[in-house]
Amino acid sequence: MYNRRAEIEKLKKRIDMNRLPVHVGIIMDGNGRWAKKRLLPRLAGHREGMERVKEIVEVSSNLGIKYLTLYAFSTENWKRPKEEIDGLMKLLVYYLITELDTLIKNNVKIHILGDITELPDRPRIEVENAVERTKNNNHMTLNIALNYGGRDEIVKGIKDIVNDVKLGNIEVDDIDEKTISNYLYTRFQPDPDLLIRPSGELRLSNFMLYQIAYTEFWFSNTYWPDFREEHFYRAIIDYQKRDRRYGGI
Ligand code: FPP
Image (tube, rainbow, N blue to C red; front, top):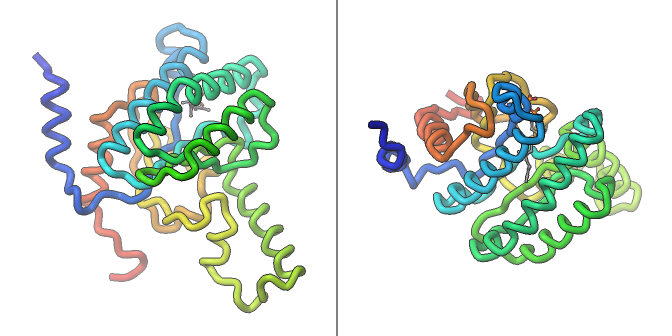
């Protein structure tokens, strides 16, 4: 009989704890298809996806991942039917309300990538509360990309840089790659080492366009609601086999 716990422990032992990725990004995809396959409404897929959020956040924090970025809602997702958007916002609120104590206990800091002023009041208030209540935590940073788009982030960063030049806060000649990094939502964070995209799609969907210059990609056909602890470990094991040269030889 297949013993899942034993398999997980075996995988865990194969991880080199001295070479963990510092920052892992995940494009959580396939919730809709997971539901369709089971003849369930799309929201059932998102609900199961939220269970995986809980699991992977906990697993990452236990393992010692310092930054975990989850793509929860893109600037393009507003094009979805209102019912689905409302459902996703409700799930976000539910997640924050039910998980906040655990996140605080585990010393996890919540940071948002994206413009949350455009969210409906209830999710916006819960997000602000979670950010405020976890702001001094330092074991792991959980970046939730919400109303996030990589191009939108770059546009906003450029506007802020131009304004700071106008105000005399920075000189044009002093602008370098680091300056741009520090005007993005991920300011002062390391770039992702590993980007995971489940569900079989091989694209970036406007995710962290500036930050992923040297990120290792890991794709799998598993839908996000089926993406468990063991898949996460497999991604890390594969990542540790890669030879990262950053353009060198
Ligand atoms: C993409 O799957 C997934 C999303 C747009 C939403 C992700 C949201 C969650 C996992 C739940 C709540 C999140 C948090 C942080 C509590 P899709 O709907 O595009 O799937 P499909 O391509 O199969 O249709």
